Picture 1 (cartoon, rainbow, N blue to C red):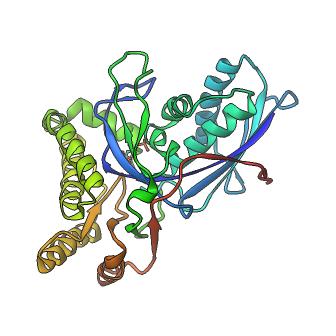
Picture 2 (tube, protein in one colour; picture 1 turned 135 degrees about the vertical axis):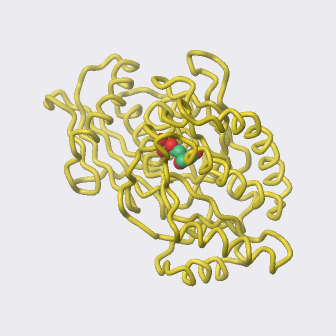
Picture 3 (cartoon, rainbow, N blue to C red; picture 1 turned 30 degrees about the vertical axis):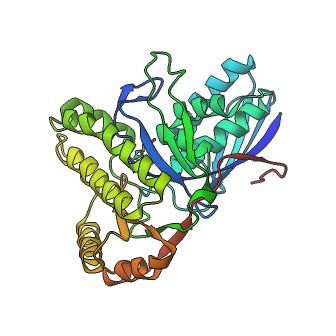
Length: 333
Ligand code: PMV
């Protein structure tokens, strides 16, 4: 009753920010992302064994704290229920990047956990079923089930059975795409995305306006990906990031993830694109100030230069990568 899976993080172009069902994790809008390459990865081994009296969780070779362990137990309970088992598990998880730094580590973590735990529990699930499980760990994890460009269809049903991930394009479709990530902070974020988005839904008066337009933006982004039109896609990516951070600021108490460096980078990117006469780099930010500069292979050095000019020396240049997969070799602590 042991299995290991690996999953990569994804960085959204059209963001998920707000739930219509807190328990099942059903979103207010559909979202779209590229799955990243193996540099942003979580590998997880799950072993169910009757000799354990509680779930034991290790993250990056350290025993997880109570809050993290409780979140894993809650998730494993879904799997135990589905598989009809009672055994507790040992979970060993390793990230290749800093957790909770606005780098969507929960996406790769719950995608890998869903695949490894369901396999270890003896369930042979389809990719759609694994994606539904991953979603219940962390919403954005649903999109890490597939590689390439992936859409999370919000669905309409109350039971969440149609709130699933769909691949829009495989990674081979547009191999020139890069995400140049600036490592501005490795600190954990002050407001968790879970708490933050619930506050936005409750208090932001701009939120209704976001919901009225976000689906149109998603359709345009999908079309730009299909046509490989980076100029168009970049405009949508930046306007979407701006829109999400606008409703965050409109939340009360306000949620402010962007700092002065992040804002200076936004300006540098806009200026660079104006000089080029078209959009060749696009910024996007999640629940943290780390800049994600989407671009194409040709402009990677320019994106790195923009980060450096704004004082960010450390970066990761990611390609678009693969979805979740099982591994034969297990992790040890
Ligand atoms: O699933 P969570 O709780 O990690 O929420 C993710 C929210 C954003 O990263 C800000 C946007 C997204 O769609 O990934």
